[in-house]
Each structure stands twice: as structure tokens, then as C-alpha cells.
Image (cartoon, rainbow, N blue to C red; front, side, top):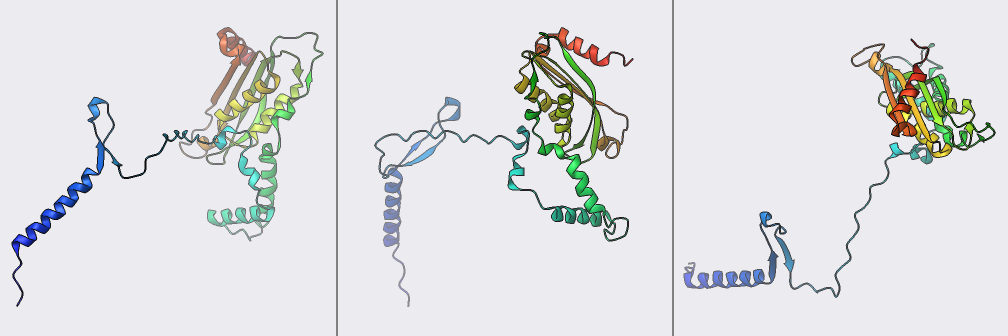
Length: 270
């Protein structure tokens, strides 16, 4: 036979457990205030923990690293490029994914041709735009008026779909200590165009490097382009132009200088 539980004993055990719980709770303090009174939310503190002699210094918030898109040359290149053989194998994979046979006669040499073409189409990654502008001609008889190079053709590739976009770039600046060779401005455009790009980023990069190296009184850059990612895919609207601009220094501060720049760019175009 089992003995009948003693209700008195059970009650005393429950009471003792309750007392122990109360004691544990009393060893913990709570900081609590209601939100509308502007105080902190409830937080638990262990009074039994050893107290620090001095308050710990506040830890400064971690600063996020600069995004790769902010650099002129992606830092990923420092990790090393794939070999030519690896690049050609990737092209063969894309050909198979597209539904064709990379081993048929017409496509057999395509991977090698594509890799060679990419070396030229994206050669801007191997060029330093700053170096292009470091040689300045100071013997210009004190010339300090506007210098404009317009209708610079370029071909680039959209970084979202790797589809070409092409158009014209127009650059003007007010020299301070001299002028740069006119061909150098065209080379700067090519340097940034021959990378995976957005038109907005490319426009800003051109203005940035001219401003930082030549330190002119003002810089103006206007880029107009047609994007095949809009003409060949998506909405498939051909003939649409996208215009982006950047004004720095005198061009940014004086609307009349902007009008002068745009008038010179459009002069003779009807």
C-alpha cells in the first residue's frame, strides 16, 4: 500500500520553495520606467556580480567600410583575376546555358575571341585616370577662360546587364595653373567608360578626377547616351537618350556659367 500524501508537508514544501524564489528575486533589481516618461525600458541587473572599480569606457560604434562603388578601381582586382583558361571556360558555360553547342565549328573559337575582346572593352580597369592628367602645360600665355572639349564618343557597358550603352561626353573647365592636353580628356572618358558602369557614376568619376588633379576654378561634364539594355530588353524602347551632368566650382555656383556651357555644347547642333 502506498501512504497517503501528507497535505501539510506538501504545503510546507511549496511555501519553502516560494520563499526561496522571493529571496532570489530580491537579489535582482530592476530599472523600469514607462516610455512616455522618457526613461529606459526594464532591464535586469545582478547585484551579486562583482562591481567594477570604474565605469567601462563607451565603445565607439563601428564605422562601415567605404563601399566598393566609391573607389575608382574595384579593390576586388587585388585578389587576382582568373586565368585566361578559366575565363574561356566560363564563356563556354554561358554558350551552353544559352542553348547552343560551344563545340560546333562556328563557336569553337568564340570563347577565345570573347576573352580577347573583353580585354579591350574593359581595359579601363588597367588605366589610372589620375596619371593621364598629371602633365600640365603652363605656357599658355595666361589663358584662364573656358576650355571645352565636346562630342567625345564613348562605348561602355551597363553593370546591371553587361549590355552596351554609348553616346557623347562633353567636358569644360576653367584652368588655374595651366591646361592639359586635349586628348587626355578623351582618354579620361575612355578610362571610365571601359568598365562596368552606370552613366551616373561615370559622369561623377570624370568630374572627380579632373577636379582633384587639375584643381580648376570650375568643371562641367555632360554625358548623353543610349542604353541598349533599354532598347534590346525590358521595355524595348530604342532611340531614347539619357542625359547626366555634373557641375563643380564656378559652374555649380553660377547659373550663368551653366547656361554658357550648355550653349557652347549645343552650338551648331540645330
